[in-house]
Length: 479
Ligand code: GLN
Image (cartoon, rainbow, N blue to C red; front, side, top):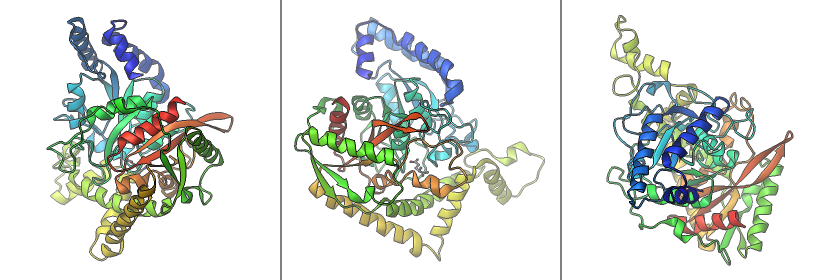
């Protein structure tokens, strides 16, 4: 898809300006129903598109992403443009610099159409925690697009951009990709710089592409990855274009299936069927299916929902109305607050319910009397989960399973029950806990209440082995 657009640009069948304004037309038509975007940058995007067109007219060589319109999750900074992270606390905040991924995409002459909706600070699985709007699923607008990168996934699914960037802390790229019928890649932790990504839980957060095809994911991933001196957790990557390694051959590839992921009754029957069919498909393609044992997702969830809020509580401390974020003081200058009041009242007013819930959970788990019992213990379990993946990857190259236990759920269905919402991450959180790469690809549709809803298949790879992972996903997609 990106390659096709690129060919058309290079052959001068279309201009980037035309392509960009076509996308804005599509946005104008579809956005009132979908509400995927929090802000649009029409002039900024068209200026860039025209600059790319001039390069093409001058016979300059352009890269695959040049002039191709994209959408960026609104927790990544683009210099001079608003960045809200879906929170009122950052309303009217203008990014003072480019995130590294943006800097890299700018170097590729990418066009940015706008910023997409998300759960506040990426905490959630449906975009219902956004302080601004709930994005709708293009396949059924009474349903959620997933989250937290729901805006990005919905924008790709509704063809309001060619590709998008999301961020994934516990599943926020893959679960919306599954719900919206798109591809979503969470790279190995450390391969994509987090500099300029508004931090949620720093030991889990990772930026990645949401696209229509696996090849597109490979193209975008290759261009945003790499060591960055602004992010000490980033690692040097062999400099290669992953799209050049998609042979589609999975003969004798060893694919592990964790039996624990199919036990219990949380897995929807339609999703189960689609995953089982996918296993058969891989067998027909010549892959070897091997049983592996991994701790059930419940342990991963319990671990995630201790460590993650701890990191949240620390990362959210900066929104105190003084250093960062809207301040109650500014709105009420006649009130003579003491400093403490500014902190308390600003945070009380501008942070949402889910963010507060996690700050409280995290502060509790980190407090002197409970640190050992919760945080430290969860860290130990994290190490054990990682070890189990290491063991499994001694035997297999890729691990296969569902991305989410169900297809897209209804808007409002889980908002009153945070625990149910957290269960949406049961299959995705393990990859973040271990830091391994994982991808969700469309695998079929499940029929629910007379509607065909997309279902994603999740493939998890070895640390830094995006090459095998992407090729395995590509093989499925093209057969
Ligand atoms: N749904 C998960 C959460 O609420 C994951 C979010 C994410 O990956 N950003 O924490």
